[in-house]
Image (cartoon, rainbow, N blue to C red; front, side, top):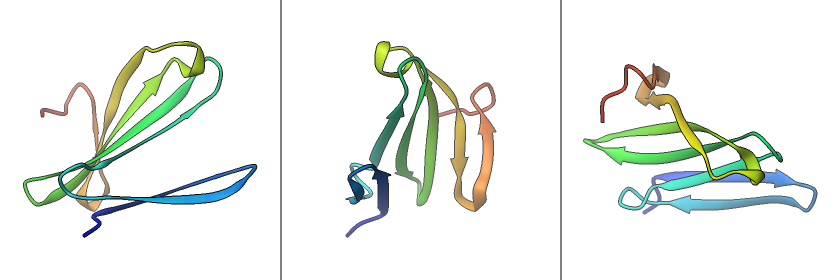
Length: 82
């Protein structure tokens, strides 16, 4: 059964994808030099989302900015403990 649902809209319309508790889901949106990568995970009965800054299409660098957990709680990366 699906735990996560993602959608992406671009010039060719909208697509949706599903993710389960075991595998989660990931999405990346990039410009040439900056972007974001969001990873959805399920752990200890809760959903949480890691938000990463990327170097865009021109770079493989990523940096964890923080997480959003159940209830919409934001935890900056320097506070979040995995």
